[in-house]
Amino acid sequence: MAKIAVIYYSSTGNVHQLAAALAEGAQEAGAEVRLRRVPELAPEEAIDSNPLWRAHVDATADEVQEATPADLEWADGYALGSPTRFGTPAAQMKQFIDTLGGLWFTGKLADKGATAFTSAQNVHGGNETTILTFFNIFSHFGAVIVPPGYTDPLLFDAGGNPYGVSNASGGKSATASDAELAAARYQGRRLAEVSAKLAA
Image 1 (tube, one colour):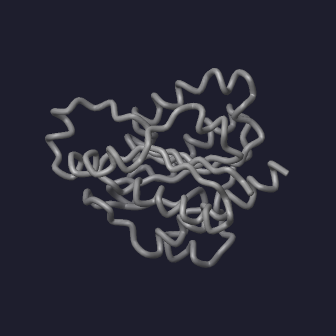
Image 2: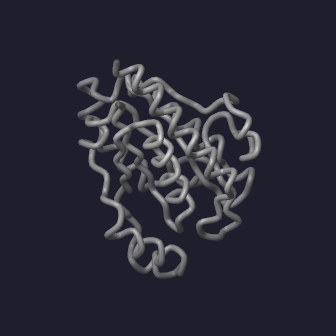
């Protein structure tokens, strides 16, 4: 049984929605899963300026534990998710990644399955480049990148992104379609299955 860490940042809930579905998929494949959110860095006044952001922060404060580097050390495979910010992961996710230097230096992030997911306001708002930025990071870790590719027809119904599940939110909260959630569950199952093989 693989151990999978699904670690994400979400401001208004779209990436959280994908993360939860990905975690479900990994569990369906028999994995032990930790669903974790990275710490919020934005000041309270910025969060309060967007009612969707405030509602999501409050809803997940006691529901989802904050991530620590120990979650990645524990895992056989990991999924990282973030909204896109100018085509790259959000600062909150980048700050968390920057705390992983000790694990990277000792090789404790290597030889594990790794996958990524994201959400942007628009279809062409940077979803693919954000995931590919995660792939750059995974390469530095020495991880084994596990994209969904085109390995199941259901991926086409979710927009056909071969790099990882993505969502175009339109500026709203929790907008993932049934097809995108199915693709996220599939991506979680695939990560769990590949990571179990690597761990064995």
